[in-house]
Every structure is written in C-alpha cells, then in structure tokens.
Length: 244
Ligand SMILES: [Zn+2]
Ligand SMILES: [Zn+2]
Image (cartoon, rainbow, N blue to C red; front, side, top):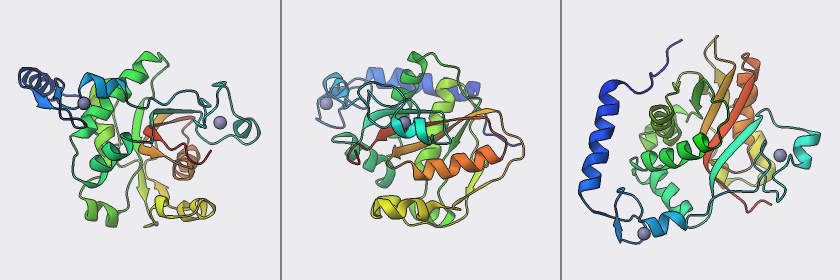
C-alpha cells in the first residue's frame, strides 16, 4: 500500500525554521489585526475561539452529560469516536471558509496544531493511519486542493502518523451537502465512496473540516469497515450545532 510518509528530517527542519522565523517577525492577527506572535491569531482571539465541548464521545452530538447519546445507544454510527475542535460559529466559520474556498491553505497548519494539541491532551491510543475525506475529481479541479488532505498532511507531521490519500475515492460527484435539506443529505452521499486498498490498519481516523449531519463520514466509515478496518475515529475542525 502506498502511503504519504510522515515527517521527514527536511520537513521537520523546515517547520522549525518557519517557526523560528515567525517568532522573530510580528504578523497581524487574522481576526483583529493586533500583533500575533505565532503568525495566525493574537492570544486574546485565540482564547476567545468557540471550543467545542460537552458532546457525545461517539457522534459528537451536543450533550451536557458528555455521555453516549440516545441515538448512539439505539443505533450507533460506524465510527466509535468523534473529536471536533470548535463549534461552527463566528469567527470559526469565517476562518474555515478562508481555508476552504479562498486559498488560505496555510490555515491548515494552524488548525492542525490546535487539533493535535487536543488529541495529545486526551491521551487516547492514536490511530495508525489518517484518511482525509476525498473530494471528487471535478471538485478537486475546481478548487485546486482538498482542505481535508491539507489538514491530514499537517496532522501527520505533528502526530507522526502516516496519511493516505489513496485509501478512499469519491466516485460520485455529489451536490455540496451544505446546500441540501437534511432529509436529502443521506441519499446524496450514498454510494459516494469506494475503498481502494486491500490492507488497512485496524485503527484509522477520518479527517474532515466540518461535521454537520455526519452522513458523509458515515458512508465513508461504512466503506472502510467493509474493507476490514476495525476502529474508525472522525476528527474535524468544527461541528455545526444549529441542527440540535
Ligand atoms: Zn486578534
Ligand atoms: Zn452519540
């Protein structure tokens, strides 16, 4: 199986150099324009971001008890763990739109760093492979890059877990889920993915930018389970909360 390798020595060296450089120059915060030492956000904007907490650990449906939700007790999704960094609300929605649609690919480094810090702080066994939710070829050509792949690449460097862009393919050019009513979303992504590799590690994480209804991740996870994967996590930058 071909996998994109985790951090090579050169990549690590380049990252150290970039960090050193960004510590020496002062860059404006992407949100307020004040000085941002890390090159992304000032410390005030960083601490004010809407951290996503109190959710069902399996599906990430908001729940005050942080216990398995009713839905997961009755009909659990294919994934066993969902980790989301932020609530999808201002200013995260704007930062993700910049990352996804406005060529600010460098934001993958910021989001990956925050997500990696969260993952490490939770001290759970790490998956052996990261799999970005793929875009269809047509969408990829249109946008020029897959934001989930960019995020996976940065997470791979930070967590030293390989990522594979060839594990899953998107075989149907589906409508963007965001433009569809909830009732049609499951139908829209049904049969959207195909698994390509015969051999995958037993524990993997799917990577995506935003979790909304979870239909896309569910279909992808089902395809991977059928391929022999035993444990699937879903990691996203943000989780929409308006559906609850
Ligand atoms: Zn700021
Ligand atoms: Zn749940």
